[in-house]
Length: 153
Image: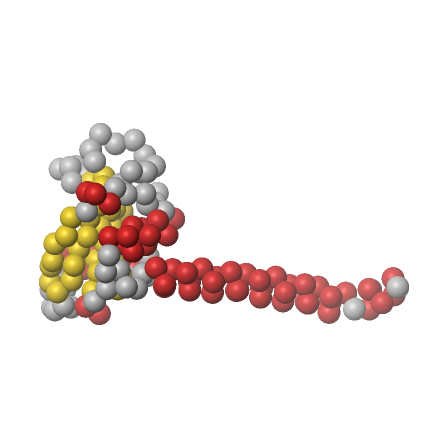
């Protein structure tokens, strides 16, 4: 038996490594499928709140605000900087230049750092699909962070 293991050690270790890679790959695929199902059809407040929960945010749905904006074509300096923030989470607003998008804002209930000013999270939605977003403070010396809490400093 010992001879079998010593002769086939590389094969056994390769199979173990391959199995672990398949398990990891499967978890990534499942997470991506779950994220995609929650980032499409964001036509209701409930769907948007569920989407935000996927990104780690607990929000007050009663405080929802809705406004519309048009992504400039081409992107101006402000939107170029804002798009850099979007690419951290895998979004790219350059694909939506000239499009009118909805911006839904919500007061954040679980911001992880102490702050005296209220914190808000925004979703950019085009045709019911999430195309971007951010977490921000409206204070003069405020901040703007990526939508996904996994990328908070």
